[in-house]
Amino acid sequence: MKKLLLTAMLATTVLGLSAQNLEKIKNNVKAKKYTEAKDQIETFLANEKNAKNLEAWYTKAKIYAEISQDPALAASVPDARAVAYETLKKYVDMDDKGQLVFLQLDNYKPIMDVYQGYFKAGADAYNGNKFEEAYGNFKNCLEVSDYMVSKKWSNLALDTTVVLYAGISAEKSNKRDDAAIYYSKLADAKVNGEGMVEIYKWLVDYNYNQKKDTEAAKKYLTLGKEVYPEDKFWPAYELDIARDGGDKAELFKKYEAVLAGDPTNTSIRYNYAVELYSEGYKPDVAQRPANSKELIAKAEEELKKVVAEKPDYAAAYLVLGQIQYNEGVDYNTINKAIRPPQGGRLKPEELKRKEELRGLIAQKFDAAIPYFEKVDELLGKEGKLKMEQKSYLKDAYDLLITIYDNKQNQDKLKFYEEKFNNVDKVH
Image (cartoon, rainbow, N blue to C red; front, side, top):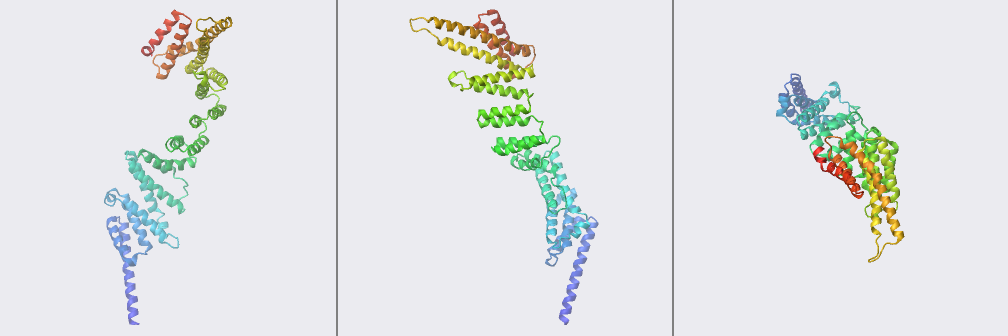
């Protein structure tokens, strides 16, 4: 009995000492003697008898969280914030009853300090153009945020700001695959607001051009259209995807669908007309599709709608002129093919046909002239032009030169030759 009593007394004494030691550590925390408290708590927890002391583990988390908040102290303990976080998780896991009394009494301050500390560190690094460092901190911040949500300490379904800056920092660190993860979270949640449309565009381009994942690209294109229906990016990219698919019939259907929803979009209508014409007209007649005439007629119809909507659309006038001009070239090709046999003469009906063809050539060239002159009217009077505008102007002059050469009108020919030669100088 004596031995048992003595053992009990010793145990009581040790427990009393442990409580006293922990109380002393807590007093150092209150006095903000964090370095001293850190060494003491590590010693305290190194003792096997204290390994299951919930308050001790919580106290350690508090100490390291406070150290991470102090720039001077944090410099000597660079992993303080990470230690605080891991220790808090250990404290939570050890609390079998899930009451978390110490954390609740502190109104969850240590975990919030860890979260806010990671965010501030990320923001400071970002503002200092240290994007890789910023990414690491924002990533850790999100991990803490997700942990709090999982424990129902936070009802923030998506930490939008942190997710956004994690994505931007990853992208600026050349970690595009990582950036895609964060941007996808935002797009999947259909976030909106100023500038957020770029997230959807980025994901469409990333998936389509870099990952070659057409379905993912279409997914984010659809989401982008839903959230930002007025943005002109979506129909243009839909057409790019359809064009790359190689099925012209499907591409033209997509054009029709896009224009049905946005009938005043002259740039898309112009592109539609050009693609129709490119498909329908080939210099070699044998290479033209069976529905060549229908495609060319449709192209002309669409171009006339363009200039009706936007009378200063120089490129549209140029193509309208080219359609007429190329029909004249076709007649000229037929005309040249009518030749007499060697040593013989053309038949009367052949002579008549050639005369008809010369009339048709002149008719088509005459029909082309007003369109080319309109290009001159719109661009020739301007000063400095963009490269593509200079190209339109040169093409118009070049074709007018050819037409007037065919007409044997030397005055007009020289007039447009001079204009052609001066394009780069004047514009």
